[in-house]
Each structure stands twice: as C-alpha cells, then as structure tokens.
Image 1 (cartoon, rainbow, N blue to C red):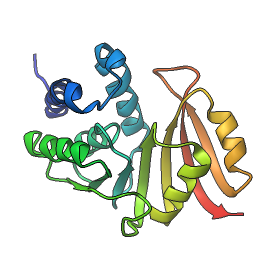
Image 2 (image 1 turned 135 degrees about the vertical axis):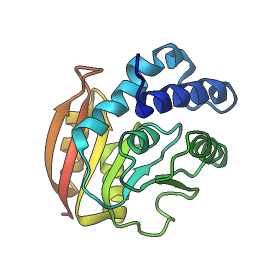
Image 3 (image 1 turned 180 degrees about the horizontal axis):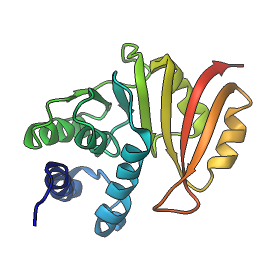
Length: 193
C-alpha cells in the first residue's frame, strides 16, 4: 500500500499531539481518543474546503496546531504562520514544524492584538473566542481582499447575530462534516459598523 507524504505527516502530527498533550493540554484530555476522527478530520475538511490562493495563511491562537499545522501539511505550496501567545504551546508548534520537516511554516509567539499586522490572504481560527471578539482579531490581520475561515461550534448562529451588531461582513456557512451543529464560516468584506 502506498502512503502519501500528507498521510505520513498527519500520522506523525497525531503522535506528537498525543506525546505532548499530557504536559501542556493542547486538546481536552477527554477528546484524545477522537484525535483523528474529530480534531484532525475537522481541520482537514477546512484544508479541502479553502483551496487557498497564494499568499500568507495565518492561524490565530494556534494552540495544538489545529487547524494551522494541518493546513501547512495539506498545502505545502503556501506560507503558513502560526500565531500563539503561550510559550509552551509555541514550543510544541516549533518542535512539530521541525519534526514534520515543514518548510512553509513559522511561529510567532505574541498576543494577537500585539503582533505586527500580518496582511494575510487567509486567516483561520478554531475554538479561540466568541465571534464578535474574533472579528477584531481578523480585521487587524486580514488583507482587504482576504478570507477568514472560522470554525465555530453549535452556537455559531447566535455568535453571527451578535457580531453583526458591530461588524458588517459577507459570509457563507459550511456545515461541519464532524459535527452537524457546527460550521466553518467563510467570511469576507469585513467592515466595522
């Protein structure tokens, strides 16, 4: 059986997450047994959906590298930057980049609101902040013609309604394949109201 380079790297990444998780809590311990079927599958569906244009992909609050490292593995032709303020999680991300031999990926260890503007073509975030707060982070770092890919849980519609009180944006919601109540929000044209 032939195993692709992507599959090998995803398996190695899962191994790294399992190894480091007990020490720094990268994902909830109760979900470790669902690592491939939930966490990695969730990030992979975003990687397949996005089909990014050339230019920087910025992953906000990267934590355990979901979805940022999965995006980097699935799209080795684009530069991926992981923005993570926690020093221990940033160390995990740097170690993973080195062990997975990802030439297209780097890490910035700073708070999102303190990091230099990134002017990214694509931005992703998963389990980071409520949408109204997340929109301010995205607005700071997204290029004017860029796209945000925000992975939201079952309260996503309520969060969108709250965000629209302060922000104007175009949005397409893609139902999650790992949770029928969750969605990946494809957001463009962000403007403060």
